[in-house]
Image (cartoon, rainbow, N blue to C red; front, side, top):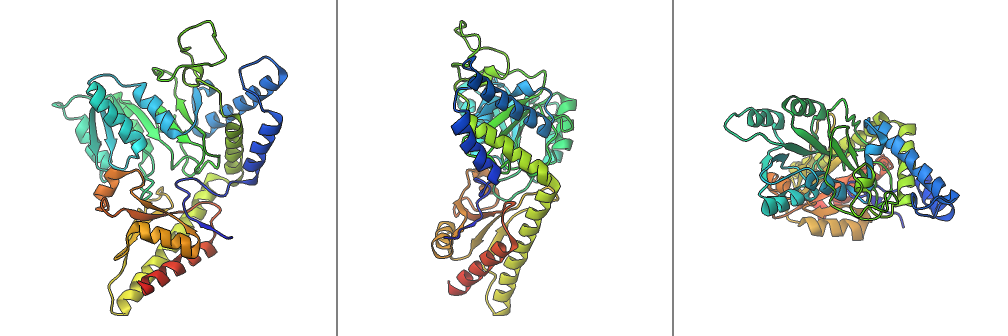
Length: 392
């Protein structure tokens, strides 16, 4: 059965063939615990994982490859960054496009340790951020944490401009790169990013259960998870050096090595080519939706499809929409069952942005495109939406 997969913001699919092959190879030939033994199999696995650290270091321009810790997703990485950095009465600034992987840790700490959380609107963010931090009557924030790219409408922030402001004012800058890593270049040094959190299974083409946290020199974190590391085993407290500080427990070797293959694939294609292709698909999809609305108006009816997206140069290939008279969940289900079109409906774990878009009660149906989508698939989706509008 042919599926038309437009849920790449959740998990990219399909993956490059080398990613599948890497998982199979690792399970068959390197199936051991890295760093947990001096035997040759353990050393081979640990060496392979170290090579992936080096790839990530180069990909994001991290000071030191040992400042990269692997996690099982970006949520874990963000919890390390947030809970490992903040103390009672600290002030944190964030935006209203944040995912719950940022919002929930922040607002949990707000209740537990009296953390002060300030949410700024994403529109005119830089101007409002400057006004806030230069206001002498307000307490200086310790941290700015931002979602680089929204998983609802694709809007993105100019990290270079924002990072420069943070650097000048000595504000820790943490970036959630879940949606952007593998699509938009991220240079931690050029952008003055102190901590970058990422997931492996979206635009980096890895598999689920992979992610990481990259920390620049001079940044230290408290660990929030303790356990075995294979090092300093006589110590009854967690080792304080990276990456052992944040890598308690057995690493996901098949996932990490597959992530390395995903990065190799990106490097072989080039970020510019990937971005150009996905931008083209987005533009063609929007043209098709606008044509559907024009046809409705020309037939004496109202435009039925409402689009929620953003059109900046670095904004992502993500379009959420609603059809008047149809709930977002019903639309997504109908697309799935009748047309084999895979989308995501609801609030997308980003409640504050849906409040901004006035869709917090209805949700929206999200189409998110990836490198392996084709123009024929886009045209098929447009045709399906045209039929739904006519029939409903």
